[in-house]
Amino acid sequence: MTNNPYGTLIRDGLWTNNVAFVQLLGLCPLLAVTNTTINGLGLGLATILTLVVSNTTVSLIRRWVRPEIRVPVFVLIIASVVTVIELSMNAWFHELYKILGIFIPLIVTNCSILARAESFASRNPVPQAFTDGLFMGIGFTAVLVTLGAMREILGFGTLLRQAELMFGQGADWMTLVLFEDYRGYLLAILPPGAFIGLGLLIAVKNLIDQRRAERSKAPIGTEQPAGATT
Image 1 (cartoon, rainbow, N blue to C red):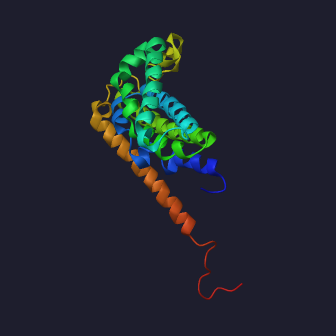
Image 2 (image 1 turned 60 degrees about the vertical axis):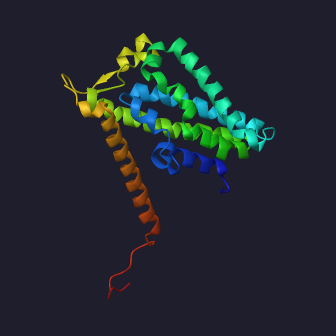
Image 3 (image 1 turned 60 degrees about the horizontal axis):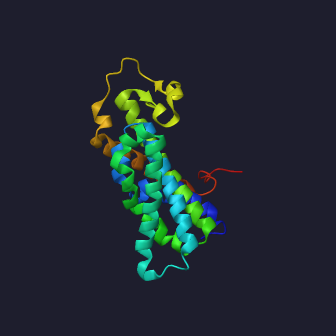
């Protein structure tokens, strides 16, 4: 850890150790539901809440859980949180709940959530565990929303399609039609399109990281050409 552990946690969650870009965990729901921006946002918010609550709870009880039973206890905590989220979405966001379907309860089996509970929350105090869960969740949600937006634009020619599923019937105005009479690009909304889109996003991230690394290694200033005078 550096002198500013919270800064490190934020950078790790959003970029350096992003769940989807670097750890490549939780790809099943990521690739399955991100055919629209709203679907990705809905699953992302559920994941953020799960990470925050489970990380915080694990950190609170870490001194009372014996090492031999810690994994079953962590899974039980995560499953309890996801059950509450699933029932809440079924009650208040029923149409979105039906679209996300099995991928809401599958949050329990998301390796990234159990990994954060086991490797970080169980070894650190509550404020750091909370921060880690929050920004790991935000980083994952950012990928969900970005990939969903890319696929929606190419597949449907819209942005924020079916916004009323999350924001209510009065949110119809939020849907942006980018291409009138657009016939759609089927590959973008099918699973192969999700793989291609995620691969492109990872490639862009790696390119940015490479450029930043090259700039950090570049010497300060420029050398004068031979024979130049001052």
